[in-house]
Image 1 (cartoon, helix red, strand yellow):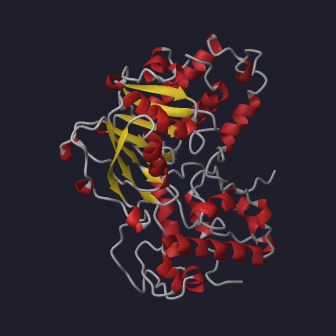
Image 2 (image 1 turned 180 degrees about the vertical axis):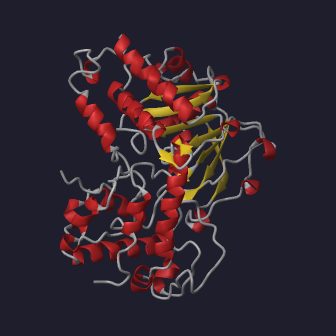
Image 3 (image 1 turned 45 degrees about the vertical axis):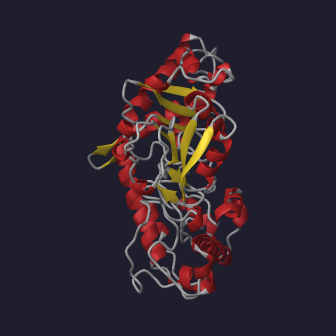
Length: 430
């Protein structure tokens, strides 16, 4: 079977090893005579699945014992309402808006709290981060919200802000949907973290919430019982029927992550190192690609021709990063330049006899928003064989057809040699 390269941001590709195990256990999980989707969520079989998934996640992310792990539903979008319902108590909550996702969170919170805009990067079209020292925090906010990785606008926090150092005692709330399980989390700076599973840890349907115990029990009276964090925690995520299949699949992914190795590193540390190495390969290619930059971005200098100090997010950043130019595309900003780069590489693939219909619609869907889909979810092959159908009989490998934007959550099965093969695409148009 020749699976296409899946660019969807989420639901996204899942490691083949995980899919194969799920397929083998579909009709009979461990001799129970039932598939996981048929089990009672209160039966001993599923309870063991749930407990193992929770234990593996706590180990992977080094989650302290005074944090509760909740498997909920509704996705990150629902958490934009559930968080203020549980934490704001109708008062002020501060928001740092660095892109589309934190902007949605800010707007939704107005229904249940008094959101205060502590900082926004809108003037730069969300292409630059805002230093915490420049935030205008409220006197005593109920919490401070950030999106730690803005996939659409390409801004990522390299380091979580230390609110205590800023003189703020409020808990930090982070939306880490797009890079959960791709790098360690400094839990000493976090009060609550949430994220949809569909980007990095399994199929759609599960929402991961990691919340400090002292933040439980403060929900507004209007909060639905199924969305009250204390109720969910007291009932071990089973106040209502949980997304059993999604939890099972996430658990298999956690086990897969624990088996990953990069030299002496294992688990999340190994994935972080793998991501950094792959991202550097891609960005070095883009920074020095005359075809990508000059064919569609007239006047945009190559990195080695016009070196500037870089403030790139590691590994995700906007395409130009450390380069400037004088052409029309340069004046229109990084989103336009990224779109041009995507069009060039897609055209390059098509010019070699490839059919772009073999790619999932995730390319075009995400392109409408930011010009490039994130190349950060798929469970890629161990060699370049799946890439070959993009370029027809030449069997050369495209830079993932649009491999310009790659975020820290590129956690799955792409080994370094596949990325090295990907950047061998010649740097001139067909």
